[in-house]
Length: 436
Image (cartoon, rainbow, N blue to C red; front, side, top):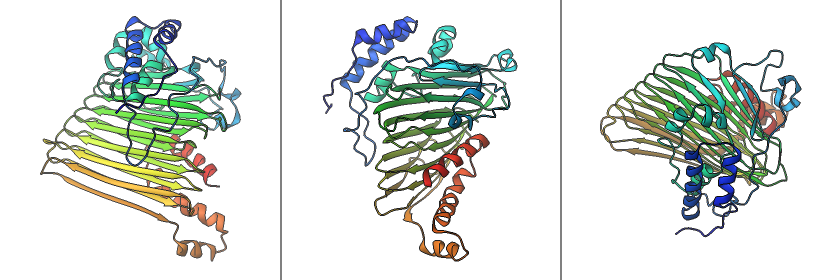
């Protein structure tokens, strides 16, 4: 039964918002249709987490620009750690609030036909290409209330298109900096990698709203064509005032590879979905994620790889550390569809609780509709081994230092295997700040 919740926006508001962005008519129509869906649809129902009382509909929505950034050297200190400030970065977009305050793409990539731009420029300057993939196959507008609200209220994001046979060696990076502590972020990332292409993408979400309450509603769609390879890294670091819904979806065609490296470091309540469909034969996906929970936050993470083609390989690895009174649900879902012969599905979820008030729940799920396959899972929830602490402290290490060493060691199997060096370094720094 649909929960009656009055939305704070109407059709006239959406139409005016779209007009001010100079969006094409099809986008305006899609926004207003999505708002109608949102009024009728239920909220998503993540396993073992009741989010009906979370605030996803009462927030300030607008398009808030941010002052242009002439150089990364002029960024606040906490943002400089994401870049080499001694060099002028290429292939970088910094979104300040909802506008691209810094944007750079190399001439080499431009000459190869690569597109890397903010989402509003993409709608207008690359309309046919953008429309072809936006909210069509990976995510549907009418899945539930939050996907519909997302479509109606998008106010930021980026579009990346890599043409056939183009190999991009250096990572492309987007930093989504919410400088205004009161405005919501409804962000959309769309990546299309054509046949025989390869690329690496890294994104960072950053806010400072410790006390101001707001919402982030984020969707990423990654389309990986035949024999293409995409590495997708992210470090989510919203402050505790932000309630977050993040939905990252991938579609991999024949012989394609999609690698996820996710640092889920938000300090507020979060529900996260990371779902990949291996559509083509011999396609591969590795979904790696780590999280640190603090204070009273509740987090629900679902990683799922659905294997449709022959000889596909899906691997999920999740590790979380819970502090204070935080709670985390880790769902790992491996599904091999009928016809996915000779496919392999593996998953591992482990949670370490640091205090009596912390809670963790790791749920391994295998759904196998084919006989000739291999599959396996592992899950554990526990506390720091006192023998490990005793051993380290007997060597002259303080209790605090010993605990930090154990935490880093616990997360190392995932962090150490992340395929993107910059994400690994950023994530290590965020983990260190959270566990002190």
